[in-house]
Length: 82
Image 1 (spheres, helix red, strand yellow):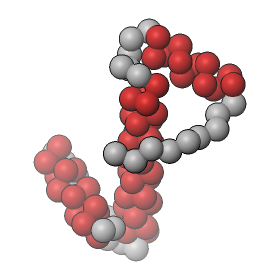
Image 2 (image 1 turned 120 degrees about the vertical axis):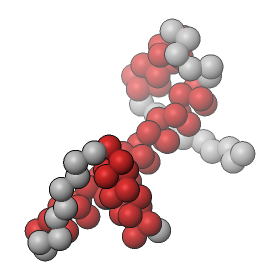
Image 3 (image 1 turned 180 degrees about the vertical axis):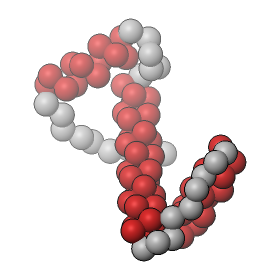
Image 4 (image 1 turned 180 degrees about the horizontal axis):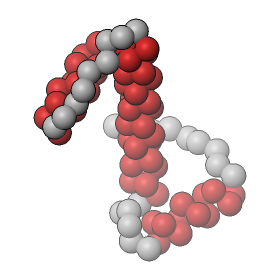
């Protein structure tokens, strides 16, 4: 596992430590890893959503009627963006 150093504003670090102290995360590092993972997932989702909007504007829109349709569609977008 890689080790990095980051600088945080005091208030932001204090807020994060409060969450850790509530027992929601095992450590500050665990909190930061989770935050980075969730942020990366949000970025990937936004990229796929923009691709879907682009396809819709190009007349390539599809109707997704089931959860499985949605999963297949996002799998297709994910594979396009690799």
